[in-house]
Length: 258
Ligand code: PGA
Image (cartoon, rainbow, N blue to C red):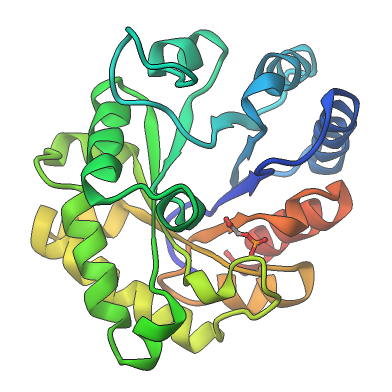
């Protein structure tokens, strides 16, 4: 670990219903009472943001409310889309961009990812920009060049003064939801190289403050070893964030590894 404060996100994806979302966030809040030294956010589906947000507020929780996606235009005829102003109005403070499921299942290309990332940061919110290579790209030895390209294109024209609100999530696509986790050494190697790109873009001071999460089949049993790596500043958790006790154990592993 590092001097950077670890950051753990629970990406619920298209899971939960109103009642289960409520009990999940209550379990997370209860499990984290008194725990310090870590930032935690949950990313419920859009329809449950208000419900989950009001439970967090009622309980005075430091867990932050995140959104899994947002549209980059401020308003208008964009059927089905959700603006950053709407999300902010619902209590959201952090937004994911470039998640591999949006890139590879919903077909978002680099232009969209870039516009969304810019819009989140321009709106004064925090952004978690997700990057990562597919299996064939890894096998062709292109992991680092894919990550570099996604970081550079995602952050085009993003000024240095905004990057203190930026987190990168390195999520190798072949590790997401598959039970196959990158080894701690592979995660560290990729993330160290991503930090080099950030250093080239923003200088050492800024780059050394930007948190880089790892995501892809993080579980309570492998979290500690991953988070112990110097450039792994926490994790973006999918499947294991759907059970409060598992997610809480992962958050605790980040504190233990700090
Ligand atoms: P997973 O998902 O933990 O289920 O692999 C991670 C993510 O998609 O953020």
